[in-house]
Length: 196
Image 1 (tube, rainbow, N blue to C red):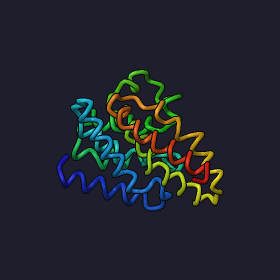
Image 2 (image 1 turned 90 degrees about the vertical axis):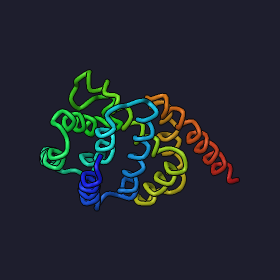
Image 3 (image 1 turned 30 degrees about the vertical axis):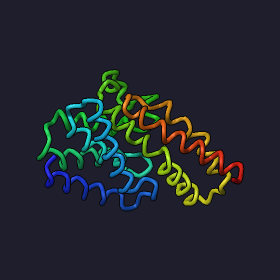
């Protein structure tokens, strides 16, 4: 990815995410990109351009933040077309539309081949890795603080959601990375619950 294109996409993402809550801010996007590229290289994925672009844009069309998905899709086409082939843009959009937790159970496009894009698994895993370990716990506590949840509700959220992420990782490289993060969360929550 050339620097002009990278800067162009990063600025678009920054602008779109200006009003996002802190656990889904631009720093989250940068960590997901870093994880995605690391996993992609470890897995031997050839299309690093699609991985990088999709990881940067992975929250752009989230139903939590995007009021007009059709308009956002048009914006993305216009943003990417000078730099990427139509095929890669289409693949990037399929990844963005299917990266969320709920899409794994019910894919947006209901196309079986969508789930077989290795780039989709990489970006999903990178997003999930950012919800694990120390970073995942901090994000969970930020989420609870923004919603005025007490510490017990945040701990319960971590137990109900974060501790099951390791079972929803797809690629061998990300599974390996998830082990230490999972153990860190277990140890932290155990100490926190024991007041130790």
